[in-house]
Length: 181
Image (cartoon, rainbow, N blue to C red; front, side):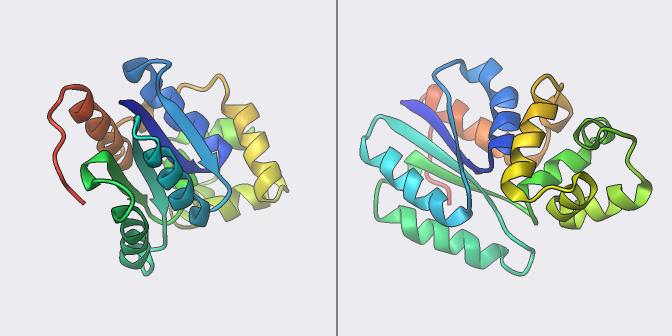
């Protein structure tokens, strides 16, 4: 089965691809969507061809987390057996990953981040990046891709969302997949 990952934004797709492709090879498909509403639809389409397994990395605020997870499960449970897909959530936004490593934030901003930016980045990462780079969502995504193209993102490999996706893909590759929502 082909491993496919759906994540919001081209920059985060680039980050996940760089983290996962060394282990899963060029067969890995990392697809980006503009918003989480599209994620379930794309995952459903991928699952319908019955040649792929799908991991969706969602994003939600702490308050929305349970509701968003349930919503994604509801949309996927009727399409295919639940052991062929995995949902992993990042609070509050996928860009929060970048703020786990000062060096990546430095690359993203083009300068040394302040302590305030590092702290705010843990809870409102997209806003910090938009404000500091003067770009809105789509342009921000393009600029982050450009700045992170050659970045070493390995410091993010231990994040729970990355580990959950990696373990899901490994389990399928090794024939030990099991049902876990």
